[in-house]
Image (cartoon, rainbow, N blue to C red):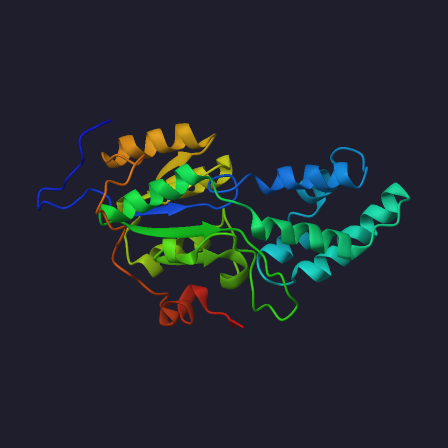
Length: 254
Protein backbone atom coordinates (compact mmCIF):
# COMPACT_ATOMS: atom_id res chain seq x y z
CA UNK A 1 0.00 0.00 0.00
CA UNK A 2 1.26 3.47 -0.85
CA UNK A 3 1.91 6.05 1.84
CA UNK A 4 -1.00 8.28 2.72
CA UNK A 5 -1.01 11.24 0.33
CA UNK A 6 -1.05 14.69 1.90
CA UNK A 7 -1.13 18.18 0.46
CA UNK A 8 1.41 20.83 1.44
CA UNK A 9 -0.95 22.26 4.04
CA UNK A 10 -1.18 18.90 5.82
CA UNK A 11 -4.54 17.74 4.43
CA UNK A 12 -5.37 14.47 2.71
CA UNK A 13 -5.04 14.74 -1.08
CA UNK A 14 -8.61 13.47 -1.51
CA UNK A 15 -11.66 14.71 0.35
CA UNK A 16 -14.39 12.27 -0.69
CA UNK A 17 -15.13 8.86 -2.15
CA UNK A 18 -18.22 8.34 -4.31
CA UNK A 19 -19.59 4.81 -4.69
CA UNK A 20 -21.98 3.21 -7.14
CA UNK A 21 -24.48 0.74 -5.64
CA UNK A 22 -25.23 -2.24 -7.93
CA UNK A 23 -22.02 -3.96 -8.97
CA UNK A 24 -20.09 -2.33 -6.11
CA UNK A 25 -21.93 -2.84 -2.81
CA UNK A 26 -24.38 -5.34 -4.27
CA UNK A 27 -24.49 -7.81 -7.17
CA UNK A 28 -25.03 -6.37 -10.64
CA UNK A 29 -28.81 -5.89 -11.09
CA UNK A 30 -28.57 -7.41 -14.56
CA UNK A 31 -27.72 -10.69 -12.85
CA UNK A 32 -31.11 -10.39 -11.16
CA UNK A 33 -32.68 -10.13 -14.62
CA UNK A 34 -31.08 -13.46 -15.51
CA UNK A 35 -32.49 -14.94 -12.31
CA UNK A 36 -35.95 -13.73 -13.32
CA UNK A 37 -35.61 -15.32 -16.76
CA UNK A 38 -34.68 -18.65 -15.19
CA UNK A 39 -37.48 -18.48 -12.62
CA UNK A 40 -40.08 -17.72 -15.31
CA UNK A 41 -38.56 -20.22 -17.79
CA UNK A 42 -37.94 -17.45 -20.33
CA UNK A 43 -35.34 -17.58 -23.10
CA UNK A 44 -31.93 -16.28 -21.93
CA UNK A 45 -31.63 -12.55 -22.51
CA UNK A 46 -35.38 -11.97 -22.74
CA UNK A 47 -35.26 -9.20 -20.15
CA UNK A 48 -31.72 -7.84 -20.36
CA UNK A 49 -31.65 -7.79 -24.17
CA UNK A 50 -34.80 -5.72 -24.53
CA UNK A 51 -33.63 -3.27 -21.85
CA UNK A 52 -30.12 -2.84 -23.26
CA UNK A 53 -30.96 -2.81 -26.95
CA UNK A 54 -34.23 -1.00 -27.21
CA UNK A 55 -35.28 0.57 -23.93
CA UNK A 56 -32.26 2.52 -22.72
CA UNK A 57 -33.89 5.71 -23.99
CA UNK A 58 -37.41 4.32 -23.58
CA UNK A 59 -39.09 2.72 -20.54
CA UNK A 60 -35.80 1.79 -18.84
CA UNK A 61 -34.46 5.27 -19.28
CA UNK A 62 -37.69 6.76 -17.96
CA UNK A 63 -37.73 4.64 -14.81
CA UNK A 64 -34.11 5.59 -14.13
CA UNK A 65 -34.86 9.34 -14.22
CA UNK A 66 -38.09 9.12 -12.21
CA UNK A 67 -40.57 9.56 -15.04
CA UNK A 68 -42.20 6.28 -14.05
CA UNK A 69 -42.00 3.86 -11.13
CA UNK A 70 -41.65 0.09 -10.89
CA UNK A 71 -45.41 -0.71 -11.09
CA UNK A 72 -45.86 1.12 -14.43
CA UNK A 73 -42.62 -0.32 -15.78
CA UNK A 74 -43.76 -3.81 -14.72
CA UNK A 75 -46.94 -3.45 -16.78
CA UNK A 76 -44.97 -2.42 -19.85
CA UNK A 77 -42.25 -5.05 -19.48
CA UNK A 78 -44.55 -7.98 -18.70
CA UNK A 79 -46.87 -7.02 -21.54
CA UNK A 80 -43.90 -7.03 -23.91
CA UNK A 81 -42.62 -10.37 -22.59
CA UNK A 82 -46.07 -11.94 -22.79
CA UNK A 83 -46.45 -10.91 -26.45
CA UNK A 84 -42.94 -12.05 -27.40
CA UNK A 85 -42.92 -15.38 -25.58
CA UNK A 86 -46.58 -16.37 -25.72
CA UNK A 87 -46.56 -16.82 -21.94
CA UNK A 88 -48.88 -14.74 -19.78
CA UNK A 89 -46.71 -12.97 -17.21
CA UNK A 90 -48.46 -11.11 -14.42
CA UNK A 91 -46.88 -7.68 -13.83
CA UNK A 92 -46.99 -8.34 -10.08
CA UNK A 93 -44.46 -11.10 -10.68
CA UNK A 94 -41.85 -8.57 -11.82
CA UNK A 95 -42.81 -6.02 -9.17
CA UNK A 96 -42.47 -8.58 -6.39
CA UNK A 97 -39.24 -9.91 -7.87
CA UNK A 98 -37.68 -6.45 -7.93
CA UNK A 99 -38.70 -5.99 -4.31
CA UNK A 100 -36.33 -8.82 -3.39
CA UNK A 101 -33.40 -6.57 -4.44
CA UNK A 102 -34.43 -4.20 -1.68
CA UNK A 103 -33.53 -6.96 0.79
CA UNK A 104 -30.19 -7.78 -0.82
CA UNK A 105 -27.24 -8.03 1.54
CA UNK A 106 -24.27 -5.76 0.74
CA UNK A 107 -20.77 -7.19 0.54
CA UNK A 108 -19.39 -6.99 4.11
CA UNK A 109 -15.91 -6.00 2.94
CA UNK A 110 -17.37 -2.94 1.18
CA UNK A 111 -19.19 -1.91 4.35
CA UNK A 112 -15.95 -2.21 6.33
CA UNK A 113 -14.14 -0.19 3.66
CA UNK A 114 -16.59 2.71 3.67
CA UNK A 115 -16.40 2.88 7.46
CA UNK A 116 -12.62 3.02 7.19
CA UNK A 117 -12.89 5.81 4.65
CA UNK A 118 -15.03 7.78 7.08
CA UNK A 119 -12.64 7.11 9.98
CA UNK A 120 -9.97 8.91 7.99
CA UNK A 121 -12.17 11.97 7.69
CA UNK A 122 -13.25 11.65 4.06
CA UNK A 123 -16.79 12.35 2.97
CA UNK A 124 -18.71 9.52 1.34
CA UNK A 125 -21.45 9.57 -1.28
CA UNK A 126 -23.64 7.15 -3.16
CA UNK A 127 -24.22 7.96 -6.84
CA UNK A 128 -26.60 5.42 -8.28
CA UNK A 129 -28.95 4.97 -11.20
CA UNK A 130 -32.03 3.99 -9.24
CA UNK A 131 -35.83 3.89 -9.45
CA UNK A 132 -38.95 4.58 -7.41
CA UNK A 133 -40.77 1.53 -6.06
CA UNK A 134 -44.20 3.17 -5.72
CA UNK A 135 -46.43 5.23 -8.01
CA UNK A 136 -46.39 8.06 -5.48
CA UNK A 137 -42.61 8.22 -5.92
CA UNK A 138 -42.02 8.43 -2.20
CA UNK A 139 -39.64 5.48 -1.85
CA UNK A 140 -36.66 4.26 -3.84
CA UNK A 141 -35.05 0.85 -4.12
CA UNK A 142 -32.46 1.21 -1.36
CA UNK A 143 -30.97 -1.89 0.33
CA UNK A 144 -28.13 0.16 1.89
CA UNK A 145 -28.06 2.11 5.13
CA UNK A 146 -28.18 5.77 4.11
CA UNK A 147 -26.27 6.68 7.26
CA UNK A 148 -23.12 5.32 5.61
CA UNK A 149 -23.15 8.29 3.24
CA UNK A 150 -22.93 12.04 3.62
CA UNK A 151 -24.74 12.40 0.28
CA UNK A 152 -27.07 10.05 -1.59
CA UNK A 153 -27.65 11.02 -5.23
CA UNK A 154 -30.25 8.84 -6.97
CA UNK A 155 -30.99 9.30 -10.66
CA UNK A 156 -34.74 8.98 -10.22
CA UNK A 157 -34.72 11.76 -7.64
CA UNK A 158 -32.48 14.26 -9.43
CA UNK A 159 -33.79 13.50 -12.94
CA UNK A 160 -30.50 12.56 -14.63
CA UNK A 161 -28.48 9.37 -14.72
CA UNK A 162 -24.92 8.25 -15.23
CA UNK A 163 -23.06 8.67 -17.53
CA UNK A 164 -24.69 12.10 -17.95
CA UNK A 165 -22.17 14.62 -16.52
CA UNK A 166 -25.07 16.38 -14.77
CA UNK A 167 -25.51 13.40 -12.42
CA UNK A 168 -21.91 13.63 -11.25
CA UNK A 169 -22.15 17.41 -10.92
CA UNK A 170 -25.20 17.20 -8.66
CA UNK A 171 -23.33 14.78 -6.39
CA UNK A 172 -20.17 16.90 -6.35
CA UNK A 173 -22.10 20.06 -5.53
CA UNK A 174 -23.95 18.30 -2.73
CA UNK A 175 -20.61 17.17 -1.30
CA UNK A 176 -19.12 20.62 -1.89
CA UNK A 177 -15.97 18.97 -3.20
CA UNK A 178 -14.02 19.65 -6.42
CA UNK A 179 -13.74 16.78 -8.96
CA UNK A 180 -9.96 16.39 -8.53
CA UNK A 181 -10.50 15.83 -4.79
CA UNK A 182 -12.74 12.79 -5.36
CA UNK A 183 -12.31 9.06 -6.01
CA UNK A 184 -15.21 7.30 -7.74
CA UNK A 185 -16.00 3.56 -7.91
CA UNK A 186 -18.32 2.04 -10.52
CA UNK A 187 -18.54 -1.26 -12.36
CA UNK A 188 -19.59 0.20 -15.73
CA UNK A 189 -16.90 1.34 -18.18
CA UNK A 190 -19.02 4.18 -19.57
CA UNK A 191 -19.63 5.57 -16.08
CA UNK A 192 -15.95 5.40 -15.19
CA UNK A 193 -14.95 7.21 -18.39
CA UNK A 194 -17.56 9.91 -17.79
CA UNK A 195 -16.16 10.53 -14.30
CA UNK A 196 -12.61 10.70 -15.60
CA UNK A 197 -13.65 13.24 -18.23
CA UNK A 198 -14.72 15.51 -15.37
CA UNK A 199 -11.34 15.21 -13.65
CA UNK A 200 -12.43 12.60 -11.09
CA UNK A 201 -10.07 9.74 -10.18
CA UNK A 202 -12.11 6.67 -11.09
CA UNK A 203 -11.75 2.96 -10.36
CA UNK A 204 -13.64 0.36 -12.37
CA UNK A 205 -14.90 -2.38 -10.06
CA UNK A 206 -14.46 -5.95 -11.27
CA UNK A 207 -14.69 -7.48 -7.80
CA UNK A 208 -14.40 -6.31 -4.19
CA UNK A 209 -10.82 -7.46 -3.66
CA UNK A 210 -9.50 -5.68 -6.77
CA UNK A 211 -11.51 -2.50 -6.18
CA UNK A 212 -10.57 -2.11 -2.53
CA UNK A 213 -6.93 -2.85 -3.23
CA UNK A 214 -6.88 -0.05 -5.81
CA UNK A 215 -8.83 2.33 -3.58
CA UNK A 216 -6.49 1.66 -0.66
CA UNK A 217 -3.51 2.32 -2.93
CA UNK A 218 -4.98 5.60 -4.19
CA UNK A 219 -5.93 6.88 -0.73
CA UNK A 220 -2.90 5.50 1.03
CA UNK A 221 -4.96 4.11 3.92
CA UNK A 222 -5.93 0.55 4.95
CA UNK A 223 -9.53 -0.38 4.24
CA UNK A 224 -9.76 -3.94 5.51
CA UNK A 225 -10.24 -3.42 9.23
CA UNK A 226 -11.56 -1.07 11.88
CA UNK A 227 -9.31 -1.01 14.91
CA UNK A 228 -11.02 -1.12 18.35
CA UNK A 229 -12.15 2.31 19.46
CA UNK A 230 -12.21 3.77 15.95
CA UNK A 231 -15.51 5.50 15.22
CA UNK A 232 -16.51 5.89 11.55
CA UNK A 233 -17.35 9.58 11.27
CA UNK A 234 -16.93 12.17 8.56
CA UNK A 235 -18.12 15.72 7.95
CA UNK A 236 -21.86 15.63 7.45
CA UNK A 237 -23.24 17.40 4.42
CA UNK A 238 -26.76 17.84 3.17
CA UNK A 239 -28.34 18.24 -0.24
CA UNK A 240 -28.43 21.90 -1.18
CA UNK A 241 -31.87 22.42 -2.71
CA UNK A 242 -30.83 25.94 -3.67
CA UNK A 243 -28.25 24.45 -6.02
CA UNK A 244 -30.75 22.02 -7.45
CA UNK A 245 -33.61 24.45 -7.98
CA UNK A 246 -31.57 26.98 -9.92
CA UNK A 247 -29.49 27.03 -13.09
CA UNK A 248 -28.66 23.85 -14.97
CA UNK A 249 -30.42 21.52 -12.52
CA UNK A 250 -33.76 23.32 -12.19
CA UNK A 251 -36.67 20.88 -11.97
CA UNK A 252 -39.65 20.03 -9.82
CA UNK A 253 -38.88 17.47 -7.16
CA UNK A 254 -41.76 15.47 -5.70
